[in-house]
Image 1: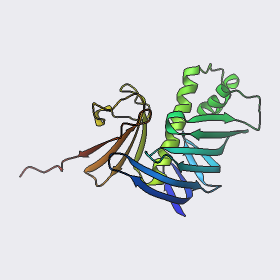
Image 2 (image 1 turned 90 degrees about the horizontal axis):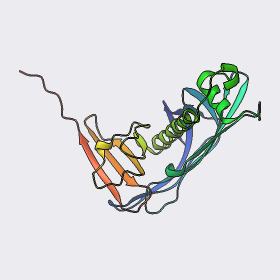
Image 3 (image 1 turned 60 degrees about the horizontal axis):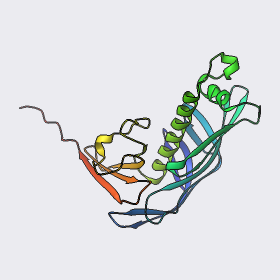
Length: 219
């Protein structure tokens, strides 16, 4: 197995991947399996993996299909996180076996404050709950990218959406910004390669190479 030990987690990963497609339409096939008992670091908390797979089944694109279940403990509460789907339709839910009656806003409040919404006396807005779930989804996508060997994975929904640190300047003007998956790989400390692909329309991939000039001291 491949051992992943970084800011996303400490996990043993069984890998069966193969590269296909063309330069204009690169594809990745196969599956990654995250070993049970590994640790995930999401949203500032540590989760224990119950199950986890990252499958690449689209023969025309690099489009991971995630299936992940993990648990964390917040005080007396056990919280279970389940995430499934592709980046453009990733579904993330929270439940608690300690108290099955807890609603999503209570579970989000526990993750943020260590207390339920009632205990903290804080009104958790629907927008806050959505943002927390999106941030968790972003961390999970980052985990998927690191597991494959990329340096970053970003889901970009538009020029104004920087939730995952998206940089619209890296994307060519002809690329539809409605829904993109951008992945990057640092070839050196000065060179970064970015692949951006539209998840809604089969328009191929946009490649961007970024180069940071070396600084030179004046003589």
